[in-house]
Length: 271
Image 1 (cartoon, rainbow, N blue to C red):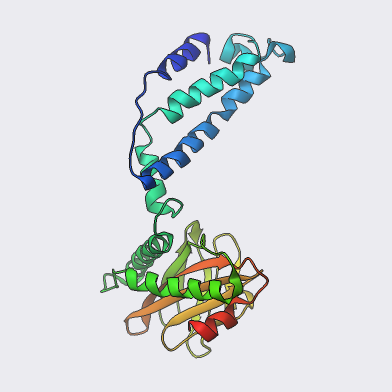
Image 2 (cartoon, rainbow, N blue to C red):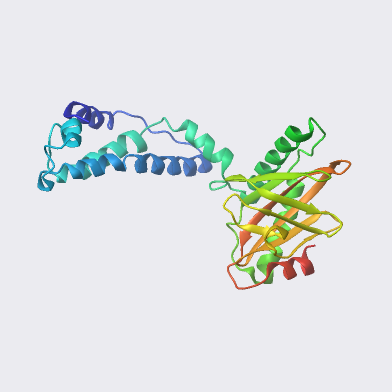
């Protein structure tokens, strides 16, 4: 990066307009701005490498980027100006904002409802891909209301603060097969055992849930799903039959802050 480009970036920092939007959008914008700022850190590190005091003026990196060296104290200034112009004042974050709002629950005013809605959409898409078009439920609110009641029961039972528990997991099941995904990727070893009344899967991060890891789980006749994972982890969900032995399920995973077993709480108050 040469002096002309640096000068251009500094000038650009004072020309870009600022966008204003709703609370949720502002939250997503802040996340995108931070990601943008983090993406500029390599420039700052390269600048510091080419500080006169470091003695790297003759290296190819410094010659290519800065035509040699520059005073180290300017690196922080350049970085701050670039962040201000390219990240803070920029109005080019629309794609990032949309992705944050549609694929995460970090900025949702209703995190449980948002998580369940995303989970049901994922389960529906997976079901249709496996079995073809079908009359899969589209209204996620009954699922969300039911799962909120499960979370409330856990809080009342000593699971403490689980307000941030909005990680969804969902999928489909057939007579012998099943699959699913969570917010970060595909699940493995998805198993819904009707006769044994057990349920489990392995999350995309490798954490085992329910029967998939030898933990306790239950699948009730009212089609509620509950399972534990280590340490103090839980899954609460609902499944619905679409046709015959085929259906979809959606739920939430989380961890109790206290050293309590979530399943007895759910068995006595929610299931």
